[in-house]
Image (tube, rainbow, N blue to C red):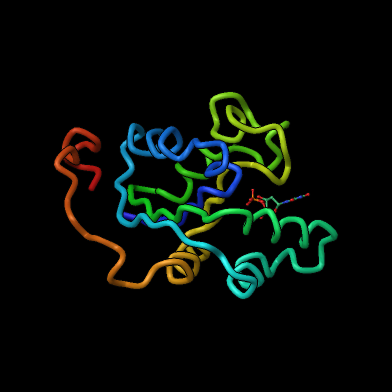
Length: 153
Ligand code: TYD
């Protein structure tokens, strides 16, 4: 099983879509291993978006992520990183395919509802960035045998 990090951004929180987006991940069969609300400070955003630090949109991106708390999720499943990225859709909501979260709920490149880790390596780093070890729970989902075939996990 693989875990991935999702942030429900202020664009999601402000538009009161937390339950709706959370529901999509649960319905798909991903297990919620961690869940918390956090107000992000400058330091964590500089680290999280370090690959974008020299982009002209970095200041507005950082500001947009601090307008309200975010909801951090640790989601688990087979190939969870890829499954969640596919559900998330293209960065720019205007280009994101209908049926994806960004394609269904956003029309913006920045106010695009969710962040999702883009590789297993980055997921491991990002989960540590947003969760302490004791905030990740290893319970077994009661529905697991109906979510995966017996030979899949
Ligand atoms: P990036 O890591 O490229 O995309 P993704 O979130 O799909 O992994 O960019 C991180 C965030 O930066 C993106 O979700 C929204 C913001 N952003 C902008 O505000 N303007 C832009 O032109 C781009 C490419 C990203």
